[in-house]
Length: 74
Image 1 (cartoon, rainbow, N blue to C red):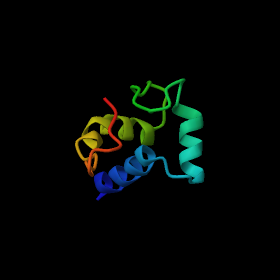
Image 2: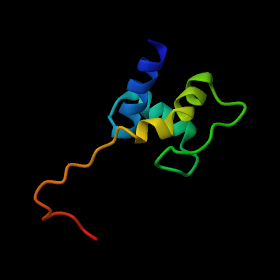
Image 3: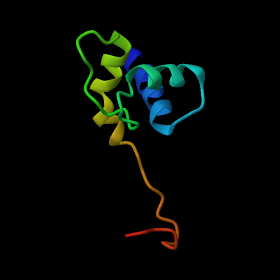
Image 4: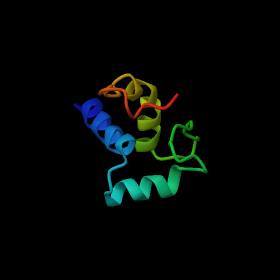
């Protein structure tokens, strides 16, 4: 259950929801990286360490809708 809750929090971060806790996390851990895909440091919170450890796993669930291809830039 803990892992599922962490995945939900991570998904909200990836999606860029406009919620106070996301603004706090981004303000504290962005470290000049707006994608938040950096590695957690030793003195970071256990929440951030857990989220950053499953960052690649979250990427596996991202799907880009293809649509009709009119808006795709190469």
